[in-house]
Image 1 (cartoon, helix red, strand yellow):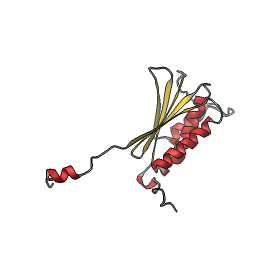
Image 2 (cartoon, helix red, strand yellow):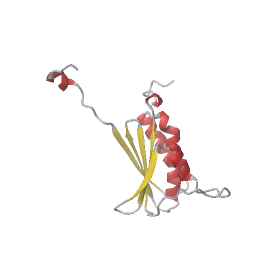
Image 3 (cartoon, helix red, strand yellow):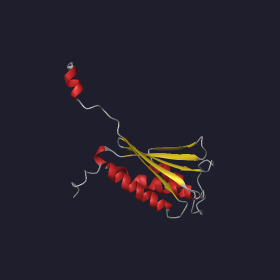
Image 4 (cartoon, one colour):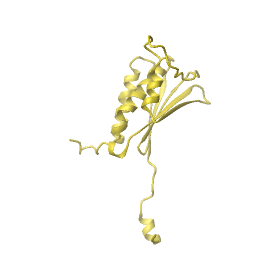
Length: 153
């Protein structure tokens, strides 16, 4: 291992753990899930995380749909750290997420099973200021990143 002179070491750029955040309030309206998907597409395109796109869109739609059922404004937060996207949806309810399997004749109740299948990890937390946040992480591998704008074919 070679020793690096102080001047050479000081010339290197510092290592920065890239972290970017987008936060959006959304209305309790049936179109909110589609709005959340569109905002997620925009954020992931900005971050060049193409490989995380499909799974993140499914997760966001499911979490937004659940939050819409509460009937009040909810908040979507998207955070990038490296190749991972943290999706957080806060709503005013303190009812815990229910991921139990539903009967086959029901058309609802399977959203959190999709979140579980499409995310790297997920969970929830009660907030001190009230309500709860349901979160999930979706990852993109380096090969899945989109090229910089202007270089797309």
